[in-house]
Image (tube, rainbow, N blue to C red):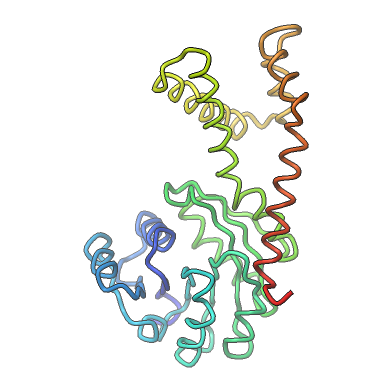
Length: 270
């Protein structure tokens, strides 16, 4: 099975989303295994997805790709358990937020290729933005394999590992920014007299349409914004209010804070 089996370590929402994406893309369930400490959760995944649930060392033995999707605080323990069971040519893909490839390389056999991935929660809908970075021993073929894996659940972008913390500030934390904006817009609609269900529908569909225009039109956001903004019109008044209240400055500060926190989480000894 070496080279074809994919072992997903961690059966939480992200692990399940990846397994589901692989199956939807045509991967044979017999080539997928999951390692999940909760027996109930493991049984649920087997029943739901048809993949085998195995103990950690059994899951990784013979696997060509091992995806580490456990909580960051559990990674060191998991790596210690699996290091002796890995095949020499295995690719390790980390979905553990904030942890550098050097941590994995130091705990795994010398020369193990590691690819670091920062996904985000739209992965649960097959609409993820996944940011990939190679470790010291990962080459283009390993990045290609990791990209093929993650492209089943969304879009993929390759960056240098030194840019991972900045990417985390945009795409990793980014969904929460949009949720907060949507929440604020809904509350504003309610304050203006709209029923909450109506304000919610107006906001959500507007966000969906705007995102599609950004993706499909190919236009710069500035051009799209200007196309909506008539001189001295309602949109111009609204945008002027947002600028007066420091919207751009707030987003820059938010992204910087997220970046800095990501750096701290990746280097707790610092």
